[in-house]
Structures are given as structure tokens and as C-alpha cells.
Amino acid sequence: IPDISLLFDGTVQIESIELNEEANRAYLLTNNEIYIIDITNEDAPVSLDNTSFYSDGADISDFESIAHNGSYLYAISARTGLCVFDVSADKVDFIDGSCNPDASANRMALGRDLLAFYSTEGGNQVRLMSVVDPQNPVFIDGQSITTQNRNINQVVIDPDKQRLIVAANSLSEVASLNSLEIWDVSKPVEPNQ
Image (cartoon, rainbow, N blue to C red):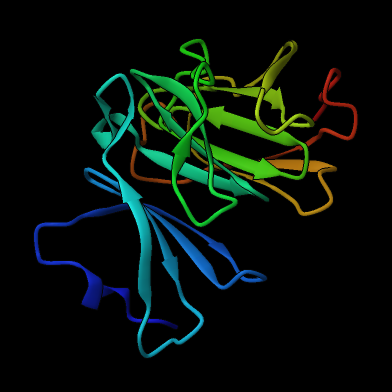
């Protein structure tokens, strides 16, 4: 595992990380920037590009989670919503007009052509978007998955996009995980448990 701590001073906090093993790249969301790191040489990772702004001077510090899909990186926050970056040329390039404030949350999961986003801060709903056109994510007929009386901790989409797994805890027992829900999302317009 590459030691990327050599690239940062002690003031950088890593919020989220995504790997592209085929390209030997790591995408990092820190407390104030998005980085592309070349991890070809595990003993000497190299920062290829970074940005601290995305649109009209709006800064990256709003974002709480990232997900990687081919040439695109998705960043999400409860305040800003979902935004898309092109990372195909080892540059972090914001795609103008790609932010969707209706997709506000602090976490997301990505599987092939499906993006699920949710809030771990008192949220009990997972909303689904199609990323068939990766530059333009769109809601899937307003579909959502709701956990009854539970706060969502984590969501995972399995590699073949057939199942969405939701880990949640009861509203009264915040520290304990007591629910694991498995949803069939092979037909995202009709998710079922």
C-alpha cells in the first residue's frame, strides 16, 4: 500500500479516497482539495493534480465524499449536492453545469451505472441516480429506499449492480448497528427488499 502521507503536511485531513487500480491512481478528497495521485511506484507516490475550487470560486471544503467511475469523479455534500469532475487527463476538471443541489447528502455508493446517495446524519432514505451518461447523472423516477425508524450508516452497491446493501441502526441506539437490509436494484425504477 503506497504511503501517501509523504505528500501532505500535518494539516491535511483525508475525508474520502477512491482507487483506480487499472490506472494506478488514487483520488483523494481532503479537507480543502481534491487530488489525483499516481501510485505506480508504491514507495514514491506522486501528486499529479489538485484543485481547491470547482465553480466560480466555490471551494472544495463543502464536499464530504467522492466516488470514481471511469473518467469521472463525483463529489457530494449536504449543502452543495452532487458535482462531476473529469479526471481522464490526470487533471481535476470541473464539468460546468454538473452540480445538482437536489442530490444533497454526505455519502454515496457507486456501482456501474447506478449511484446511491444518502445522509449518515439522521437520514433514513437512499436516493438513486442513473450514471449511464456519467457527465449527467439523473434521478431514477424519484425512486428512493427508506429504512423505517433507522439511521443509515453505510450503503454499498455490489459489483454487478443487482443488490444494494444498507447498514443502519435504530434511532434510539445510535452507536449500535442493528439492521442490514438487502435491496434488489436490478430494476432501479422498482427497488424491492
